[in-house]
Image 1: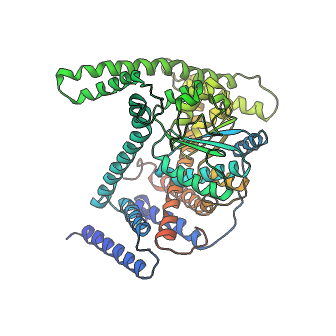
Image 2: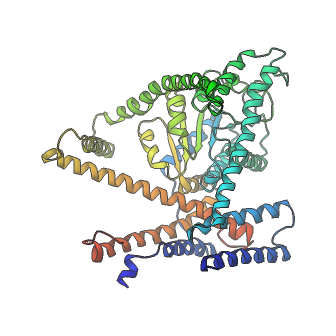
Image 3: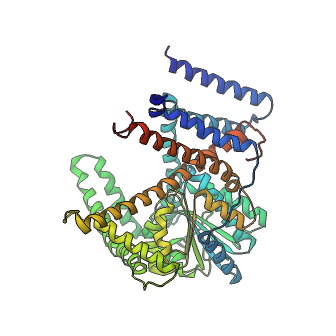
Amino acid sequence: MTRDQIFFITSLFVFFVINIFLLATGSLSPDWAGLGTFIAAGITLSLYSFLYKDNPLFKFTENLYVGVAAAYTMNQVWYTVLLADVINPTFDLNGQTGGNHEWLLIFPVLLGLFMLTQLASDNISWLSRIAFAFVVGLGAGLAIPRTIAANVLAQMQPSMQPITADLAGFNLVVILVGVVTVLIYFFYSVEHTGAVGVASKVGIWFLMISFGASFGYTIMARLSLLIGRAGFLLEDWLNLQLPLF
Amino acid sequence: MKDFLINLDRRFIFIFVAIGVILPALTTFPLPIKPTANVRAIYNTIEEVAAQNGTVLISFDYGPGSMPEIQPMTLSVLRHCFSKKVKVVGMCLWPQAVGLVQQALDTTSKEFDAQYGTDYVFLGYKTGMHSLVINMGRDFQGTYPQDLQGNNTADLAVTQRIFGLKDFDYVICLAAGNTPDGVWIPYGQERYKFKFGIGCTAVMAPDQFPYLQSGQMNGLMGGLAGAAEYEKLINTPGTATDGMRPQSVVHVIIILFILLGNTIYFLYDRKKGGAK
């Protein structure tokens, strides 16, 4: 037996001993809620075991999550989309359409089914191209004007305001310098020497500050998740009455 | 010692971070939380909507993976709306959010005696993303003929006068993905010109600031800190406020590790091109 195997078997043993102790002392209730807490604690610890080393428990839990998430999504899609928006109105199963069957819904359903023909034999898989052509055409038609309006034109407008002699004006200058120098940094048709080189270096500084801000926020995000799980383990599972959680 | 520090096992950092999270849980020490202008803007807009006896649409676009950050925002915003008798319409662009939102609605509606149908409505998840938002703008009741419970939206007091996105006094997106800048702004706000605010995970927050500057959104809650600020504004400390203590302690630990790493790099390892 390797050291890692001994470590993981001991960890599992300790986990089960703790749960038996919690059950015996009444900290973990012997009902569905208690079982849920037990499973959630086990899954949380299995995922965090990756911090020590990749292991079968982590792999199992990772795959379990994917499976549960897919099943939950399928359930939601069935009840709130397929049943409510397709089957009920088409066949008027719940009287929502007052006897008027919405047969036109069959066409989008057919397009959806065509997509699945990709998984079938080559004889019918060409049908999926019709569905993909529709999706690509519709997607491009919707996305191009909306993206230009919302992400380009609307973003350019505040960078082109008159510069005033106050804090807002200073902010505007900083943004203007940032936009121009970063654009110069990504402009590769001219050699980055002389004035262009200086501007490009200033652009790098703006990029580095932006990456630093993103990194700081990312640390905050990941820590929030860790704090959430730590709170669950200490308060809900181990039932420790700590001042914080 | 030199080699040990240069090739420091990352598991030492994990242990320090774990200590930084657990130790503040054993004690209490006050940390000031000062609401920023971006969070206050969402609060003030809901106050304005309350004065008009208006309706707020909240799009819950997150899942269990981002629950520690976004669920406190959901609870705080719902508490604020229900306490001021602002009508709430909830919807989800992420299927994983449905259970979490239902839980939050049940908890907060009981606290303020908010009644389903007259004070709030939950539409659940619907697929479509951008096409869904465009259709909601054109014909809300046609897009959502029924709520999650199967009631006709045309008959419910909250939704019977809502015919499009413009009829909402405020739209809030609480998100863990790209739905604010990828769906709501280009296909909703930019097209139908409604007031829009967001609460998002901290990872997303830096990417949202340009939309604040352009006025496409009027408020932003970023991560656990944003949620804690909102809890402060509504005077109801919750898990976000509690989380600020370990958050701050671990931030200090990480800053110290960054300083240590850079110091070692400049002292010993710079000429060699980094740790091996």
